[in-house]
Length: 129
Image (cartoon, rainbow, N blue to C red; front, side, top):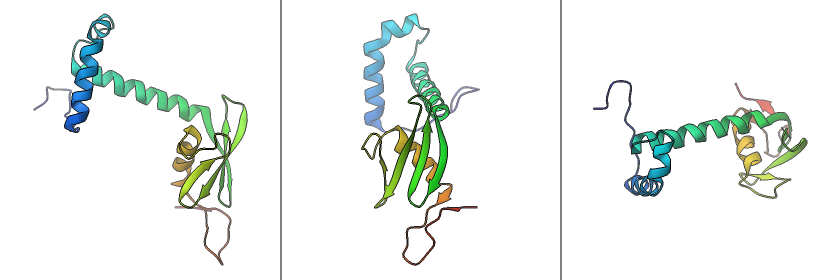
């Protein structure tokens, strides 16, 4: 049972070994930052990751969606980025990639919208309720 104020999570054994190894390598530096245990090290990693995701979300804004294109405003680059939905994947017109910050954000938008890509149906995006 975890202590009061804590919860347990389950992770794969190989991931735990990687975390333990990384913690041991960085133990001296981490101690200076007030991180004195594997638990606090993992908590710090997760917290930093969540803060980074928040910064990414505030950087990107949904501009519009039409047919199979999701247009995103990237405030850091100060430009619009088109992400196409093709063959079950998101493709970024700026990064020329299916795996970038913009495609990840487009997937989060796609969950809320239903672009129609079926013959004989309207090709305008519909709001999913």
